[in-house]
Length: 120
Picture 1: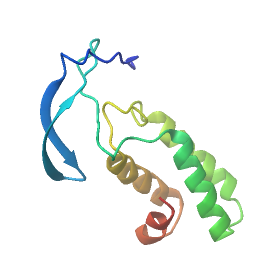
Picture 2: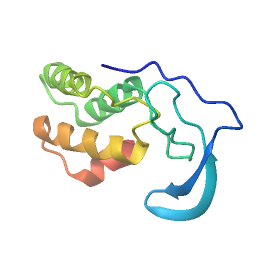
Picture 3: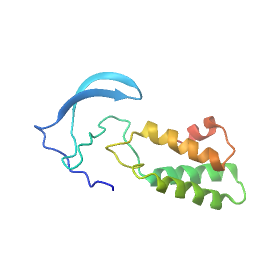
C-alpha cells in the first residue's frame, strides 16, 4: 500500500550520504517519513511524475512518425502504472526512473538508448 508521506521535523532529520548519480558528495541532513520511515531523496536527481515520461513518449512518437504508435504509448503507460512507487520522491531517483522507463520503452519500440536519452 502506498504511503502518504509526512516529513519529520527539522530537528529529527538524519545525516546520510548525499549521493548524486552514484557520486558521493559528503553528508547532508535528510528528512524521513514519520509513517513508514522512508528517507526522502533531497538531491537534484529527484523523481519526476508519470506525466513527464508520458510527454517524453509523445515527443519520441512525433519524432519517429510511426503508425500505430498510440497503442504502443498506451502499453508503455500501463506498464508505468503497474510500478507502485515509480513517482514516489522518497523511494525513487530520476536516474532509476530513467532506467526503468528505457527498459519499458524498449519492449515496445525498436529504438536505441541514445535516441531515448536525447528526449529525457
